[in-house]
Image (cartoon, rainbow, N blue to C red; front, side, top):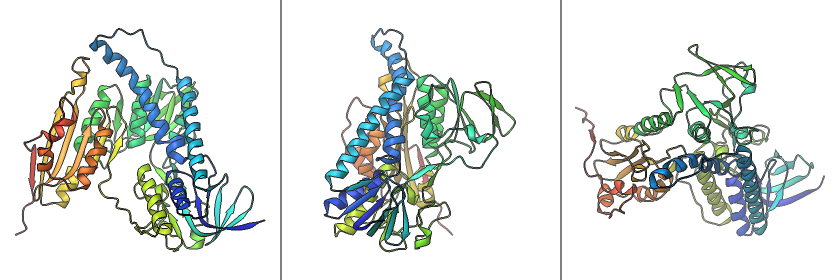
Length: 461
C-alpha cells in the first residue's frame, strides 16, 4: 500500500487530540488525525455535552414546581423521552460537524479509521492498510467504561454510553457507583421521573471530595427521593419478566427495569502497538508521560484520559494545546495539574477547587475553615426544602485560601471564577475585602467572617 509523510499523526479525535491537531496545524505542521468512531470523542458524543443537555432536561420539573410559588399557574407538564433523545442527537451531529470543520480550516486531514503503530514512526490505517510515516505521534485515544469484576449477569448492565440512547425511560433504575458519572445520571433519571437506587461499595459517595460536600450532597439527593445504599455491591443480575432482579452483597434483592454500572473508566491503549515500540504503560493501562506529555519514546506523546492523570475534558484540551506549543510552537509548556476547578452536575450541583479540609490538615500545620449552610433565596417562595453549602479552607499560617467547596444552584459557574482566585493565591483577607454582590448566593463567599473550625498541629517535642 502507499506510504506518505506527515509532521504529526494524532490517534484519536477527542477533545485533546482535536485541540493538539488544530494548534499544530496553525503552526504550519502537516497533520493527520485518525478516529475510528466519531469526531469529538467521549465528551462531545457520549459524555459531557449530552450529559449536560440531559441535566438541563431533568431540572425543568423542579422549575415548574417552583414557578407556582412565584404566581405562575401552569398546566400539568408532560415529558417525551424519545424527543429528548432525538433532539440530543441533532445537537451532537451539529457539534461533530463543527469539530470536523474546524480541523479542516486548520489544514488537518481527517481519516475515519482505527490507527495502530507498526514501528516508532509508522502508523497503519486499519480501514485501508495505508501506512503513514510521522515525525511525531500523539496518542489521544481516551478511555472507556469498565464494569469491574465479573459477576453473574453482568452482560445485562448498561454503561453511560448506552444510557443516553435507551428506547424508553426506565421506571426504576439501579446504578452502581459513587463518582461523578453515577451520581449525575442518578439525578438525571430521578429528575425525569424514574425511581433511582444508587449502590456504592464505600462508606459515602464522591470519594476524594471534601467530607462536608459528600455528606451534604447525599442528604440533598436523598431528600429528592434517590435511595443511596452504601457499603454494598451488586453480586448478580437476573432477568425477571421485562426487567431484572438485582442481588446485593448482604442479601438484599431489588427488582428494576434497568441496571447501570458507573464504576470507572480504563484507558484505551489495548492493541495500539504502544509497548512494542517502547511506550511505557501504568498497571491500569494509562500511558506513562512526563510533565510535557512525552512518553519514553522522545517523539511519541500522549494527552487526555489515555494517560489517566486528571480525567477531565478541559485538562485534555489544555494538555493538547501545551503539546502543540511545545513541539511545534517553540514554546516548551509543562502542565500544572494543581488547583483544577471542577463541577459535578448533580442536583444540586457541586463545585470544588483546591484542597479538601482533610488534605489541608494533612499538609499544613495550621488550617482555618469557614462554612456556611443556608436556604437560598430562590427557593424561599417556592417552598422547596433545600440548603446550599459553601466552604473555604484557609492556610492558617499565611491566610491563603487553599480550597473552596460549594453545593448548590450554579456551583459550577461559581467555582470557575473562584478557581482564578485560588490559583492566584488569594488570601482570606482578599475575599473579605471584595464587595458582595447582593442579593446573591455567591456573596456568602466574601461575607464569612468567623471560622467554624481551627486546626493546629502540635509541634513535635
